[in-house]
Length: 208
Image (cartoon, rainbow, N blue to C red; front, side):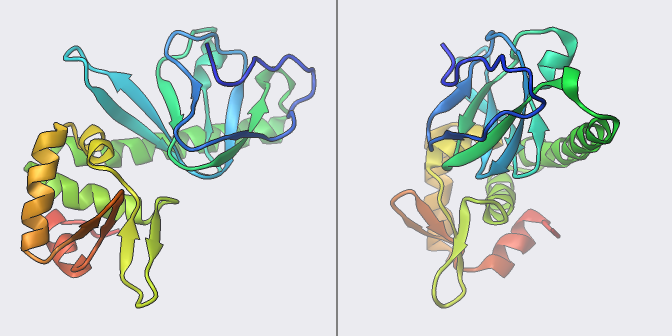
């Protein structure tokens, strides 16, 4: 069952809806009656691997339009989960104006380019490099923040990092400990402070 009931009103855009952190908007195999535009927060699309592990295949950021399966009459291809409290708007493509269709095209194109770049997090380098790269990416998202001294942090669990880097939680936990010992990170409960951000950038090759 999806978290949100299908929207069937004839308007182009329905009232904004809220999905709380940790809740699922829809699951793989659900019907796809509409697109969505994320207004605020951060979401991710998750796929179950043949080994039974969750893999993050896409991050959805404010302004992104997603749920494009409805354009092809297909069921949902991924589970979409809120990483923070989110606000989104259902969009019915049959009522879109020409200008809105261009907005949709630009949004999907930009996300495709970002997904190709984000694929590096999973495929390039050893796991230590991928963790550094992924944390720097998340620091620029709604999961990031800064302490009073300006040092940035990321609100993320070891499990989330594992699912975003194609690794196991155990491997991630081991390397997070090593990166702490090397002075790169300062772990706390569900939060990682980027103690040496320059060192993380050097490790990761990240230039964003």
